[in-house]
Length: 280
Image 1 (cartoon, rainbow, N blue to C red):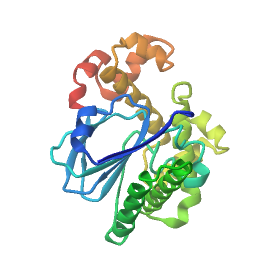
Image 2 (cartoon, rainbow, N blue to C red):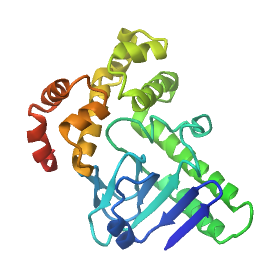
Image 3 (cartoon, rainbow, N blue to C red):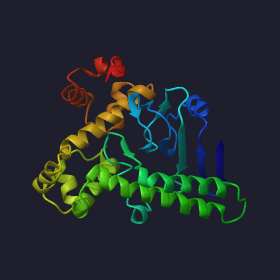
């Protein structure tokens, strides 16, 4: 099954498919889509930016357009939701779904949630509603699909708040975490210091550090460095750029600063890191 909605006037596209052979053959590399991967079957192996990730039964994985997806396991029972920013822009509509920092742009790692037995029926019903709406060819189809997608994202965000945070009362504090993660995603190429982000959030660097430590999260500095290193990996894996070109693309003052950063973060030189990426 492959269901596709497009609006050529604004360039929007939304797609749902459970054809694993199609997903595997496409190797969703360097695309422009947000991706929600729902594993309805047994555990399956996928690669995200060439890093193995195991997805268990009734788990969902959330990826941004910056993250590359490859399905490895054969015979998987996967449903893939894909949409571009012209169909629904996560950043512009975060006030509607509040998913940035929980589902998308949360960290340099992937975010995975698990659907509970209590929620499984409602997710199946929502999937059926998607399928039904794709069969309607009228002038409000796009709007209806957007409503259903927002409902899916909101439901997933609620689960993520419980499973990834697990304390409802700390939502205001985790809004700061969400905002920090989004700011890093938007500014990591030009802002490397915690002080810069603390100023944007009207918080002191110490307050930020204490907040992340309180909930056993990566430190703010580590999050910034991890995001930069992740982009370095992507350049090395999916482009022909030299280390010098990568260093300037990512805002390093010089190739030597770039080399020093990679050595500090990985323990090896950029050339050794590049050659051994498959093992990282």
